[in-house]
Image (cartoon, rainbow, N blue to C red; front, side, top):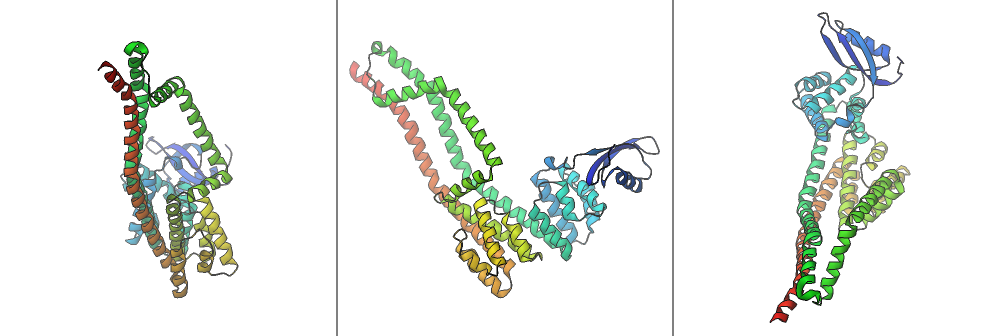
Length: 408
């Protein structure tokens, strides 16, 4: 068995003094270190098998709720005066959620080996971003780990709240759109062909059809003949676009640029991205991180590549000696409210708190804009749905009216 020189998870199996089979995991730098750690931790166990595992085997199974619960409960326990190792052991043994228990046990093993909490959390799950780990590391160095975890937990809750608001605001328009698509497909696939057969049999097929009816019948025939090919082509195109966006950063940047320039939607996205940047920067500054390091980390939290590049431009201007407020005012991507509150923060020495207030203000404006847009969109979609389906039904019944007039 080869010896690993980096931190790695090892799966062990063994027997205790009574002959009972046991198994578990241990994190160590190489096989010899793993056996030594097991000897110190479980002296009564004879290890019969020890094999390396992939470093992130549990990361893919970690749910966002488990990561959020770990941070929230750790903050509560540390705030109550419980030591870090004891708090992790409590969560590893007493948590009801299986994912949380596994995640806490993994982090506890790393911490027991002497690694910082930020490094242990980064190793345990990909749910903890580099910005989160940098914030936790700053809290450890400053001796403010409990309050730092509390701020991070509040940030998680805020992000989830914004996500829930977005889902509630978009649920009704998306439902109306899905119903409209389903009804149109049903009309084209089953209803219109029946009317076509009815028109063909009526009066020997000599009924003249209105142009709208003929066009709709042609569309129905095309959907019956080529509908599966159209769906397959659209699916393939979607997969190609998704793969291109995943692999090409210029393509993602162009997509983000287009999103920022959409009417009304672009303004909301810009405010939400600026709010994430301001909240992350303010939280890092409050945790004691230096402004250059905090700005570098906050740029990656924007969520939009165009805004991220703009954040790096602001960082470079500040590094050359320019004030943060002046750099923000000189960039069109940043809302004016951020620069105004940054001016107050720089003059009063409360930059972190002002940035967090700016983030809250931008989130409120974005929420109001989202609600207003959805309120405007709902009647428009209902009207469009009525016109679309009503027009299709009217086109099918026009020849019926002509037949009735002919009989009369």
